[in-house]
Amino acid sequence: MKSGIEFAYAPGCNSTAVAEYVFSALLFLAEHYNFELNKRIVGIVGLGHIGTKLQKILEAWGVKILTCDPIRSARGDVGTFYSLNDLIKKVDVLTFHTPLLHYGLYNTFHMMNEKLLMSLRPNTILINSSRGSVINNNILLKVLKIRKDLKVVLDVWENEPKISIDLVNNVNIATAHIAGYTLEGKIRGAIHIFKCWCKFINQPQKIDINDFLPSNQYKEIVLHGMINQSILYSLVNLTYNIYKDNTLLRNLVTQPKGFDNLRKFYKDRREWFSLKIKCDLRITCKILKQLGFNSFFIKR
Image 1: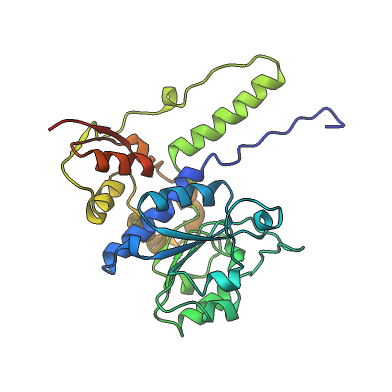
Image 2: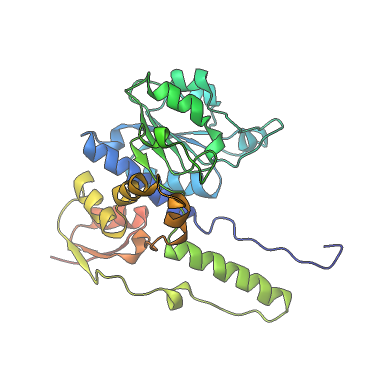
């Protein structure tokens, strides 16, 4: 600012994308291991843009949420916040949405150490889509060879792009740091930066994200009756099949620049709102809308 240089960034532009990624991973595991997601307790570590969005989506599906955010707790924000030590004693799922801080009171570097990993409840699902070094990857690998009950989803890794192939082979879902890579997220970021520029040159403009989005390949879906987990999983897979990204990484991680190329040439995925769903049951329409789908009620 002293040099007359303005700075702009786009916080939260991919929050929907990451939240939908995490929910997609949980639905995959729920269907694969035959459990009801809304019967599990999810612990969210970090309640910023992404953590807040994820909480909203999960609660729309009836999932109980517990949160850990020492910064928000310290400043007196509304809500009940648990310490990480207490949180892991109470939850079935632990998902991280924190920045990577190496020093200070709120240090997150290797916050999940061996002691905490070993103290996770039986069959806990561990998800990291924030920063790779929030979890000590070497220790995680060591623990996974002991704790066969744990289920792990990793989108971020230590030492990217030279990630641990052994760790890839020991987690349930492995993706190439693409959780936030939706077309909508990228366009939101670009629009925000452009608006900041327009404001800087004193030429504000109105821009609609829909002007930049292609039509979805599924023109319209008609859904009859009550929504359930299996139907929801099918709807989610129409926009994003997380297991395909998992397979791509496993097939290419050993190739030169395999990890980098997956990110560089990643095929844009769409967010759930790109699906237009007509429902003949009001409660189904309401649930889908709260989850983030483009749903409408129609009379039978």
